[in-house]
Length: 92
Image (cartoon, rainbow, N blue to C red; front, side, top):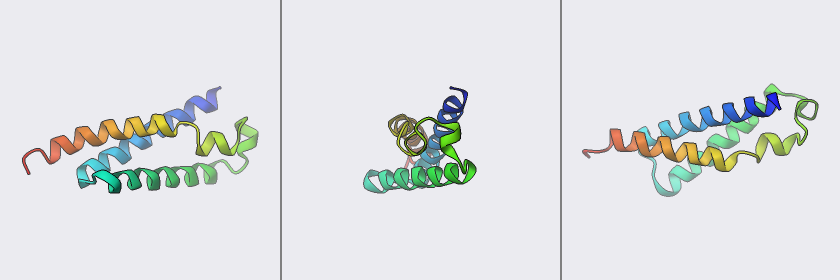
C-alpha cells in the first residue's frame, strides 16, 4: 500500500510539472495532448529504470507502473496547464 501511495504522489507531481511546462510553452490542442503522452512515457521509463524488479514491489507490476493513474495524471496536467497558460498568455 505504501508503494502505491508513493507512486501516485510521483505521478501527481510529475503531471503538475509537465502541465506547467506545457502551459508556459503555450502548447494547446493536440500538441498539448501529445506532450502529456510523451511526458507520461518518460515517467514510465524512469520508473521502470528505478525499480528493476517491479513485480517484487507492486502486485500488478507493469500495469501499476504504466497504466494506473493515467486519468488522474491527466486531470492534474490539465489543471496546471490551464492555470499557467492563463497567467502567462493572458494578454497576448
